[in-house]
Length: 214
Image (cartoon, rainbow, N blue to C red; front, side, top):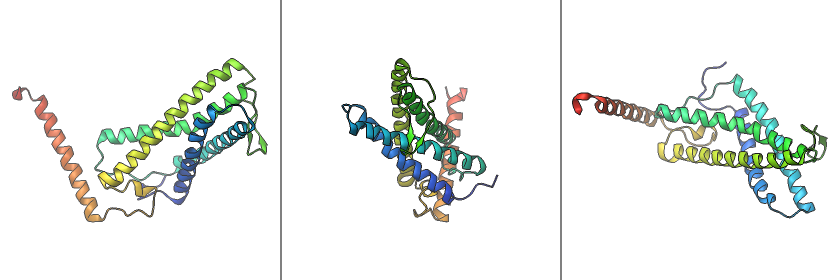
């Protein structure tokens, strides 16, 4: 394991944006095609959607392997403890969904009797036998997981924009290398500001529980 780098490497950045692009296509496509009447166009969209899902699953596997052997950049010192924990939890759930969502779609497709053929070239094995009731149930599960993924992606995007335009720290530049990073003076100012806020919070908490203040 390497020490924490100042930013993500090219491999991590490429994998991040490749997965982000595919999810940005798959989610709206999935919600759009769901209510379309049965037609060759709908079946073609379903094929595209499944191809993208399997590709995300493969890229997520590569990304997880990379992540397990490389340290991520440290979070800004201006982030409070709960923000760090929330960010770590959100990233963990996102990683999990990158696997669970495609697999749930694959299982659903198998249960409905439609084999998944990646890119129209590579037939993938059915994960379960054809079962209409199971297929309908998995369809609801798959939809719910996609809604959860969409919500987390939106939150992830809003958090990144907040870091860039409100907190003015270097978080977004970790994944967008051409963005300007805070100068040393700005970073020091942010660090001092964060430390002051934490000290003020500690003092406030101490006063709140001091029995002499009641």
